[in-house]
Length: 367
Image 1: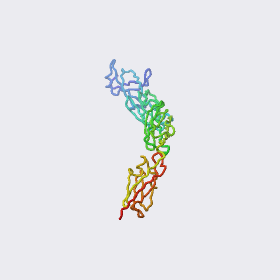
Image 2 (image 1 turned 30 degrees about the horizontal axis):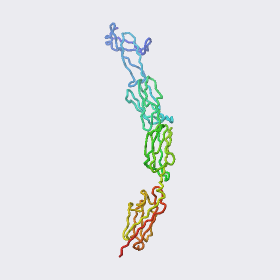
Image 3 (image 1 turned 60 degrees about the vertical axis):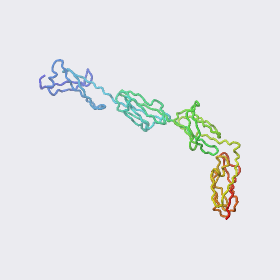
Image 4 (image 1 turned 180 degrees about the horizontal axis):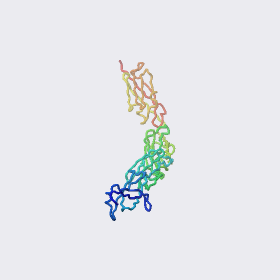
């Protein structure tokens, strides 16, 4: 070969024995002299000519060594990107769950995060072959039916149906009522028992008598009230509840107060007071018309209790306190006059059998 001549080396793009040949041209003859001589090799660049999209680059380049005049065949193996996909499913209804977080991990680190779509679907794409882990988030009020994380190995093909199944946790609720008045009873203890009868949770009724146990799996349960002294159950004190796919409501308990024989019938003791016709008489509850009656008694319809205006005005309260004002009397009050009024009361178990009588003896100083 003479200086100044170009030399073409045939290179191939696939394995022997037959290569799709390309041509490598040495443009500067001076570069060729470096390789002339027995047993010497030359390095030739090899660049792919491919429209396959490669992660991180659209071209690959490398080099190879060959003896002068020898054909070199090159084989490129491309890692084909793949996808991992699946759904998030409510195991009780079979419907997809939207807005649930799914994480993709590699070597223990999160490399991608996605939210499930309206059908519960998710998809991670553009993934090179290798080992991955797909995990769903934990969420209050839900329970995993299967493992929350899955190991996935990609080898150039998509992996589908990596599904996660969950079920919503359930609630049992109800009320505690006074069967006589319909009033909700707060402060009562309600127990939750499992299928073996063991107490697994306890709560207390709140305003209106409401109680609730939540975060429960499907299964058989029993709710029981704890009776208080002085009360008796109207109906059952324990209710069997089976949870399947919906909350269980209106598991109600009714009770009524136990009336001791000595409490009813209820008789009111009469009362006597003194007052001056020139001063307003104010009597507090500790000294009022119920002071000599059972604790917890209340005056019934106190607003309806009145006196003749010629003796002044009277205002009675539910707790038995009252205010008598003789200074506004429409007539002259004779000294020693008794101003009398009647009232009814309830002792917490029953109404008084007869009205009570209160007397106020009025004295008027001589002028």
